[in-house]
Amino acid sequence: MPGSELISGGWFREENDQWPGQAMSLRVEKVLYDAPTKFQHLTIFESDPKGPWGTVMALDGCIQVTDYDEFVYHEVLGHTSLCSHPKPERVLIIGGGDGGVLREVLRHGTVEHCDLVDIDGEVMEQSKQHFPQISCSLTDPRATVRVGDGLAFVRQTPDNKYDVVIIDTTDPAGPASELFGEAFYKDVLRILKPDGICCNQGESIWLDLDLIEKMSRFIRETGFASVQYALMHVPTYPCGSIGTLVCSKKAGVDVTKPLRPVEDMPFAKDLKYYDSEMHKASFALPRFARHINNSE
Image (cartoon, rainbow, N blue to C red):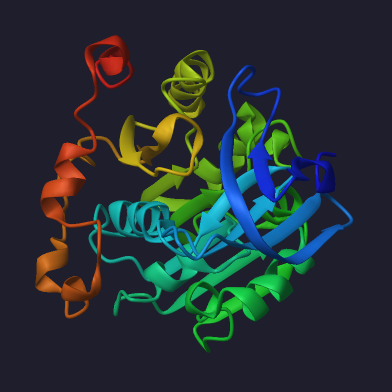
C-alpha cells in the first residue's frame, strides 16, 4: 500500500506498477493528511504555490484530484451520461466519495434523487475538510450518501430503478477491482431502467488499451446495446488523459451526440470543460484506438 514513502525530499512521486518506468512528480509545500484508511492509503498535500495545482489528493500513491484540473473528469462523467438520457431523474454513483461527480449530477434540474455509495468514509470526510468546492454536494437534500460496498449495494438493488449509473472508481489494482468485472456490469444492466445510461472510469488508451478492449467487449456481451469510449484530457493523470465507457441499455441511442444539449441548461456558463462540442469530440479517437468505437 504505497503512501508516505512517495513523499521524499519535498517532492511527491507517483510511482506505481500500473505504469512502470514513469512517474508524475509535484513539489510538496505542506502535507495535510497522510495515513492508511481501512482500504487504502490516503494522502493530501498542498503543492508548490508557484505552480497551478493547489491541493492534491492521492490514493495508494495515485493522484485522484487536484484543485486545478478536477473539473475535467467530474464534468465529463456527470454531463456526458446525463445529457445522453432524455430525462434523468434517479441516478446512482458508485465510488466518487470526493463528491465531484455528485456536484455535476445535481446541477441537472431533472434529477430528483441521487444515491452515492463509496467504500471509504475517510475519503468523504477529508474531502469535506480539504476540498470544499468539490465535496459541496455531499450534504445536498437530493442526495443519499452511504459508506459501504458498492458491489453489494448494486447486487441488492431491485430491477429497473435508475436512469443513470456512474461508476467512479479508482484503478483496478486496488479495492475497486471487482467493479471492473463482468458480473458487476450484469447487475448494473439489471438495475437500469429500459432507457438507462451507464458510464465509468474507463482508464487510459495509452496504458490500458487491452483492458479497455476487454471491458468494451464484455459490457456488450452482458446486454448493453451500445458501448462507446470518450476521451478526456487530465494533465495530472498518467499520460495526461483518461476515458469513460458510455453505455446505453436501449438500442438505437447514439451517446456520441448529446440528446439534451447542455447549452439549454442554466448552469452551462459555469462549466469549464464540457459542452456539446466537447461531448461529440471526446468520442473521436486516434487511429490506434479507434477500433474500440467501431466494433458495433
